[in-house]
Amino acid sequence: MKKITLIPGDGIGPEIANSVVKIIKASGLDIDWDIQTAGSDVVESEGEPLPTRVLDSIKQNKVALKAPVTTPIGNGFRSVNVALRKELDLYANLRPCKNLPNVKTKFDNVDIIVVRENTEDLYAGIERRIDNDTAESIKIITRGASTKIAEFAFDYALKNSRNEVCAVSKANICKLTDGLFLESVREVSKKYPQIKYKEILVDNLCMQLVQDPSRFDVLLLPNLYGDIVSDLCAGLIGGLGVAQGANIGKDCAVFEAVHGSAPDIAGQDKANPTALLLSAVEMLKHINEHSYAEKIDAALARALGGKILTADLGGNAKCSEFTDEVIKYL
Ligand code: NAI
Image 1 (spheres, helix red, strand yellow):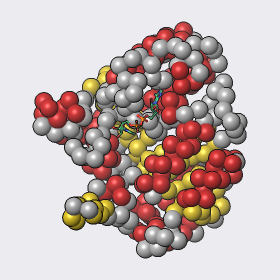
Image 2 (spheres, rainbow, N blue to C red):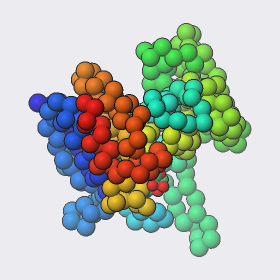
Image 3 (spheres, helix red, strand yellow):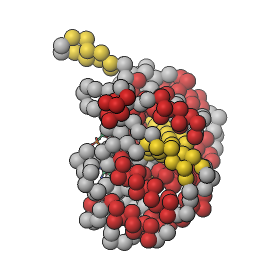
Image 4 (cartoon, rainbow, N blue to C red):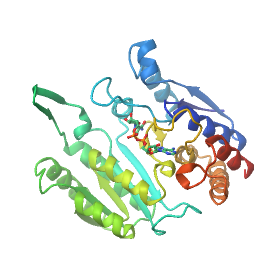
């Protein structure tokens, strides 16, 4: 039986993780879930939000499914999500944004792959308060990380029959940092003559995405712009409740939804488990369980076409009721 690390997270995390585990079990696939807690509760009991046991479990199992973990705003411990990506060198954040069958949205032709660099940029967390009225944060961009993520994006484009990679920056303002990012990507692009390469400034990209998302194919972004633009793209396909993601490194992969722990609806059985379920479907493909992945995908599509939907998709069903609906179609 395949052993996979499961981080149930907090906020809506445990509710949606429970839903996904139930659906995978109902599909007939047996997984030995290695449950590893992380986050604020763990700080209280173990003194740190991301104990080494969590990292060791992922290193051993190579694959993890992770529900969201809350990060305190302004002060408190550093993001578990950022630390996990850095510790395991999960350098590529892959966020496919494609219209889902039966989910009505403003555009019906969205098919964008967001590739976000996952280890540096302003997320390096190098900040300091210079004096009472001034603070600074250091934006780190390296040729190594930029080249690695560019190679990932072009390889992905090639293997998945995509036509174009568009590098996103603000190199008109951040001339040195974003300039180095672009310089590195341009170099990589030369090795992929089959894939069209273009560049765009992030502000212009946001405007064009909400006007006509069909103009874009694979978007390649440094960490911060990638974080923001992938939420924008999630909005194009029905919101955070349906947007999937994966963090991929050389040795391990951690699959997780784009959204966070949604404290506003936590503990109320209201969350949409679709985003985490789609991330889990990608995880099943990653471990070569294609038939179960297809089975769950088909059942989800049928459930999304029905009337038992969570509030974010215009219904009034609970997370648990939607889960039962997906299971009904399996
Ligand atoms: P959020 O993504 O948790 O929520 C934004 C809005 O989307 C809220 O109105 C929420 O109710 C809604 N939403 C999110 N997921 C949903 C779902 N599955 N079904 C229905 N509605 C859903 O973003 P927010 O509020 O900015 O962040 C909350 C916490 O999550 C913060 O501590 C943040 O640091 C953390 N976070 C964690 C992430 C992770 O674990 N990978 C990623 C993003 C944020």
